[in-house]
Image 1 (cartoon, helix red, strand yellow):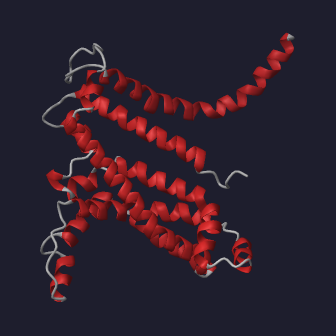
Image 2 (spheres, one colour):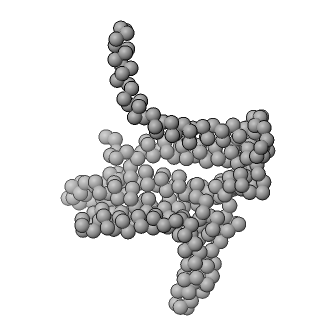
Image 3 (cartoon, rainbow, N blue to C red):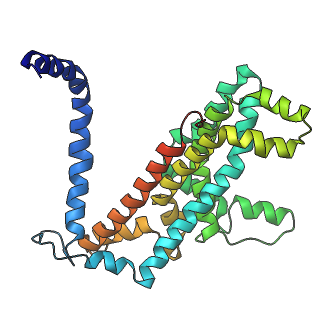
Length: 289
């Protein structure tokens, strides 16, 4: 190939590379390099702050397979999966109503109403739920006024699910709204003309059309719920140990085992990376034909 042609190709590549350079440097310094450091630490057994990093194998990863830590990981997955199901169950009707039924002038205002809670600190939202769910809180006061027995929700799994679902529901609604807004009503009319009842039309026409939005919203909520630290810490108490809290204990708690904490972090990064790959695959704007 002539030298002039190579030179011209190099000049053509320079503008896009110059545009990508700031974000590329940012990702390199704040994402790739820290991840590599965490991976190196994960290969060191019982390392503490200030000690020499000398990788010696996969002992930290094998330790994750112990029943105690597997129970914590499965509990984190349980909370993340159930939070995703709750947000999908509650968010789909709301997103459908806003996108298809509510008057158009009100849609942006209604979406803003769902986004408003995100403008406040997640810490404040969790403390608000503590006030509501505690034994003498608003929820049990309402039950008492109705003559019903009080429920002990605080410092239990239901309280964690309530707090996480409340925090992540706006994300699910926003993603589903983006898909439901593009719903082709002509297909629903055609299904009705062919004799399909509303349930059949929903499962065979509506769901396939918005499946990319369902997949993207569910995976977004799942990823965020898996790494949630505040809600399990404040609403779950000591009995609600999660992977995020376990990582915190390894780095900043009494144990100070950075190697094992790094191995747990790399495991979570792997799970999140798989979820992101699924978002890229299934979260397209329109399904593949």
